[in-house]
Image (cartoon, rainbow, N blue to C red; front, side, top):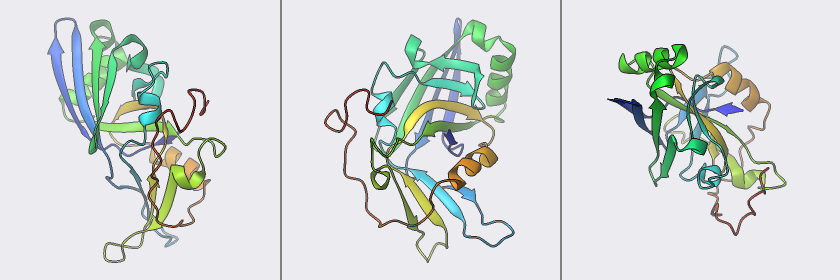
Length: 210
């Protein structure tokens, strides 16, 4: 599983029967995965293109969770029971969740909401996987390009198609775990070409990425 950086804005509203959370995850906002380290390697950044998570969020049968710290032992909401909803726009992925009262009063739920109220846990981090090459060619799912020399020397990976499984409330992303898995994949620059394919039914049957 790959974890994105904790970008976005979160808001919380208390209700008699629970808590409502709304947030947004901005597209095309670069996250620094590595600054190059002591070895003097090149910095590495990642950004999520608009609509990159569309495949699973548009299918009611695909379960997506809202978690605390990428832990499935700490669920807050899920699409399967209607407590988690998404709205995909050109600029952001909007997230709306209802945290039931008994979840909000649990130890992990209460801690998470207390951290959110105090402004300590305000990040939104996506947990996703890349589709297998047999389903979506690698050059269409992701591309690595050179950063504009005027801005720096980083390699930038852009995710065009990813399989979203969860969003998490975090203080910061699990950089070590994410980077270890990302490092195992190619960081060789590809031809700068935006994927023009859509994620509609014409691209794949329902089970294509399973």
